[in-house]
Amino acid sequence: MLVQTMESQKKRFEDIRVLYVDDEQDNLTSFELHLEDEFNIATFNDPRKALKVALEDPSVGVLIVDQVMPHMTGLDLAVKVKKIKPYMTCIMITGNATKQLAIESVRNRVFYEFLEKPVNFSSNEIKQIVIAGLSETILHKTKSEFRFGTLELLATLIDDKDGHTHRHSQRVTEWAMKIASKFNFDERELMLIKEGAMIHDIGKISIPDDILKKPGRLTSLERKIIMTHPSRGGDIIDKIPQLKELSTMARDHHERPDGQGYPRGLKGEEIPLMTQIVALADFFEALSSKRPYKDPWEIRDIVREINTVKGSQFRDDVVNALFVVLQEEKLISHDEIEAVTNEQAA
Ligand SMILES: [Fe+2]
Ligand SMILES: [Fe+2]
Image 1 (cartoon, rainbow, N blue to C red):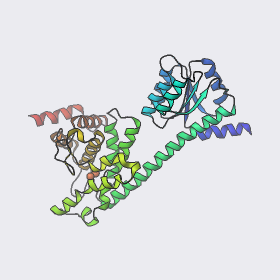
Image 2 (image 1 turned 120 degrees about the horizontal axis):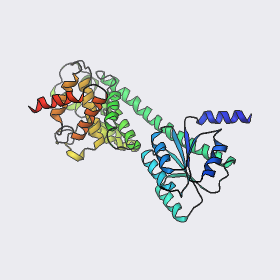
Image 3 (image 1 turned 180 degrees about the vertical axis):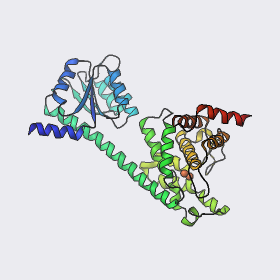
Image 4 (image 1 turned 90 degrees about the vertical axis):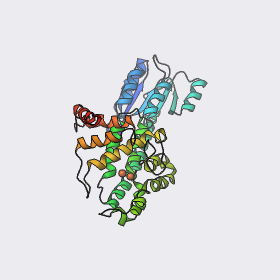
């Protein structure tokens, strides 16, 4: 019966890894001895190694740290990890529970639980704490998946309403994430870009169908109405406090660094980097996809077109990042990009 319980426990949490880092080998050994049957664990006596694994292994969801260790304190380690992976649940186990450490820990808001040594790793209490930490991570993950799922649903509605642009929002999101991977964003910022790209065209929801779906040429009035979709989208998102950070990607994805964009005519750095990334992903997706009025463009023509608006419509670094992505995706070689660019310069 007991064996069965352990098995089911392990199954429930097997996808989430618990890391424990402590420079005292006895603690690590005891932790392994009493917890490895029930949990997916890994132990480290060097915080630098633990940091690397915590950042690189996507399955790590709980980090248990000792405070006083060579090379890095437990608090520093937890702060570094949380900065990149805000949904990590961190637990402190220390023999050095000073007032100063307590104050710094509260200020940094990194720890879910704070325990004093010695800890009896065979006790039920420690198992319950690990379970609570794992549950917290699952809750965060579920909340974030639910939020993204809802935004994805909205994006499908937008694309279906448009009719011409099947899966446009999904593809813009995929390209935006590839471009964003070339910059130094942390996990939280990457999630914002993913969410913002997904609903960048949400303002199209309030554009009348007969204009959005019109197969022929638009009148200048109809074009003006379509051009209101960014500000409509920004206004819709601004009404939801939990989504506020995404509103720039809806409102400003047709802005240009040279100030010639719309709706606000923002310039240069006034347009956030994440919004410029979504804007270029949007532009690239539109050129590379089939529409009722056009076939997908050849990749060389797209590169040529983007080169002509580099620096004016899109930031140089964002364009360069896209070109790196296109090479990685084997859509075009470095030499071909050079050749297109040199032809244009000639
Ligand atoms: Fe748009
Ligand atoms: Fe778009």
